[in-house]
Image (cartoon, rainbow, N blue to C red):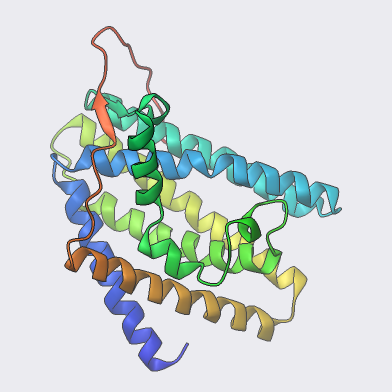
Length: 248
């Protein structure tokens, strides 16, 4: 990574860290942040499971086992965020029950400037688990997991500890951050198993640059007030009961 890219990376990461820390600390915006993370973590499970099946079919049992564990971790992460929402008497909206035009709006919202920039040059077809280039998956996911571990730690540390609900959420997010560090580690090892050190460095630098550009797109979107995302949560039914999700 050259100096200018590194500097822009620091700027973009700083804006992102401030934004999400402020959003999760504020009780008014916290539910929507939790809902977004629940959808993201749970939504990655089918993708990782399909990748694990593909690795098995290709004879890479080591990678298949790591991907299976990764999927299991993401399932638990989704449960942690869902439980945190329930503690606030909230739950993720069932988008399947929304009117068709609302669903189309949601589809447009999900095409974020961040991912458009991050995966620039790749079509949705090329990013499907059955066909995605392993280098693309490993390079992009390594950067995302590595940074997520730091971002979740920062978010956890801004949460107040003056009540059991936020204290339990903090512990849960810290456990997620630890998992993300482990995910980045196995993906880096997977890259080292497949290519020389110099090639790994080039791949990591490429996706670090992409992440930097994506963060700047995200920041620009916020500064231009183009982020008009609607609420992703609704009140839970009073009759529902909840079980504890224990942070490992």
